[in-house]
Amino acid sequence: LSSAISQVSAQRSILDSSLSRIQSTSTYFKTEESQLTAQQQTLVGADLASVATQLKSAETQHQALLSILSTLNGTTLFSYIK
Image (cartoon, rainbow, N blue to C red; front, side, top):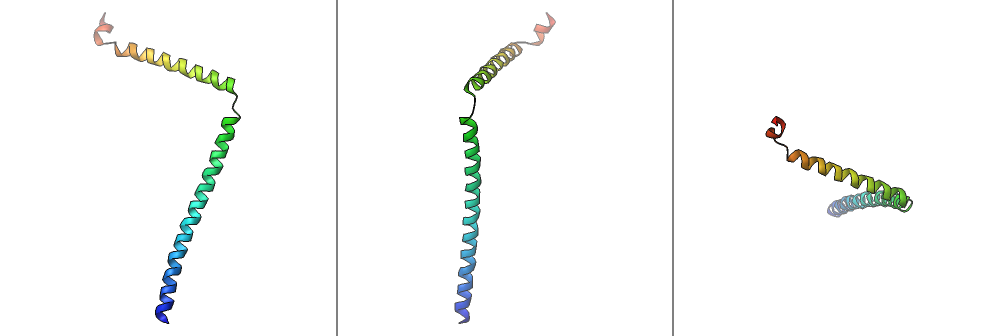
């Protein structure tokens, strides 16, 4: 009888641990679902004209930075001496 009680207790411990992991995973996925739903609503509700304007502005800034960097990369100490 003592052996059976020990086995039941061990099995209960294993099951409790498994249940805890399942609950943690469930909570994690519920949080992920909420975050994804919020992000989806943000994307769906975005003003396309505004987003396109922001994208074009970012592209222009990026090109300007690349131009400056290429100019700086070609500059040497001799360029400053001239």
